[in-house]
Image 1 (cartoon, rainbow, N blue to C red):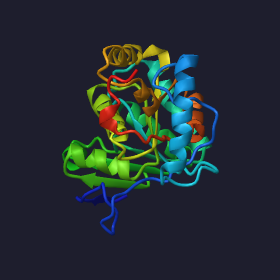
Image 2: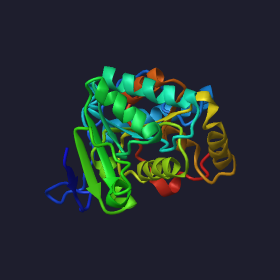
Image 3: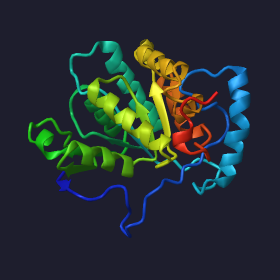
Image 4: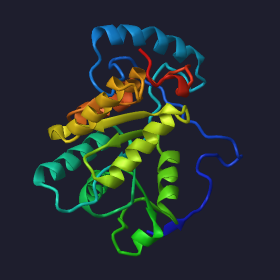
Length: 259
């Protein structure tokens, strides 16, 4: 399978217009970076409902998620439970009829997810910097392997090609990808679902840090709505597809330190 070298501004479409994804989701889960108290949920509900009417992001009648971007570890040293988690995630993605977009590698959890999706008849798009592909760690048996020059271009291309984002256990690269897509959502650059798969309590300490942000008023409580947390692949895919779309009308720079 030939790879496709590309270098472009991934934040805009072919006509030069700023790109946004038309995601639609059905009710069923409270969007939250961590569990909300009943009081917090009651405070958030009116704002989210009102904003949903104002945002020009698609039709809320049903889901329109076709591709999911998976961020995860490239390490082969992870324990068997993480490898099994990756395989189960691939099965859920395929069962949901979603196409996979990921970092293009054939190593670690990345490789497991890609190989399993492809083995089960799913569609795989890998996006990989040339300098990484040259190390012969790219997955060459997918449907498409897009080459870019830099890590920044890789992240932008992954965002462009994806309707939602799923974060599996991973290291510094995974964390960077997750935080960038969260920050872009906070800045109202997209409204796509982001799900953190906190299997085995892997991200407990990260979620505790986020709680520290809210306590210290570095980030506003409403930032909980930027993503959801799941503990199993099945729960994660359900949230990706059925969580109500992100809806905010407040200015991002007015949210820090809110009561």
